Amino acid sequence: MAMPFYVSPEQMMQDRAEYAKKGIAKGRSIIAMEYDQGVLFVADNPSASLFKISEIYDSIAFSGAGRYSEFENLRKAGIQHADMKGMMYSREDVTARSLANGYSQMLGTIFSQEMKPYEVELLLAQVGETPEGNELYRIGFDGSIIDERKVTAIGGRSEAILTFLRKEMPESSPPLNMALQLCQQAFEIGAEPKTRLEGLEIALLDRTRSGRKFRRVETSEASGLLS
Image (cartoon, rainbow, N blue to C red; front, side):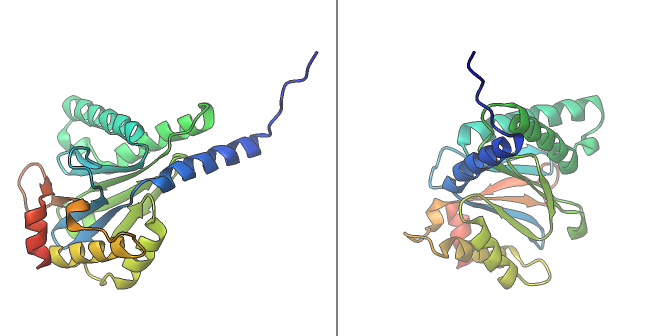
């Protein structure tokens, strides 16, 4: 009788992690940065029809790097969860923290139990009534959660981008035009060819808006801000 092929649990988890990291590294980067009136999202995304940044609920935004079909499934699951919780309880009970915990459990289960882990990294942000109330969460492919402050990035060249932004970002949250300029400069570091404004997807969580805080920034508006 042939003996079954044995792989140690440690080796199996290491192989899965390397597989997921390679898939995420192929994806383009996304930045989430606090500015003086909310949270700015900027994604390196040349596609005009496939969005990487989207609204989850009234004051919560979602973005994902890696395999598009997988983070799109996670986005839809988050919207369904938020809508159901908002209807069963109250809209104030839907928070980025609870969604991040839900995503963490889902990705952790997939990573440890499924044959193939998800090749995704997620960003969740919630804008507060004051800058101190902002929340930024980065969720890894293995379900790990990192509570970020001021700025974070995922995908592709996220380490180089974060190194630049943490060095250049002022102590207090900058105005929108300065925040957008910093993000554009960060994307241009080591990028060949250089990233064009038309290749950036830009969205805001703007606390000054009544009701839903999420809105997209068109290229013409972004160009005006940068000029």
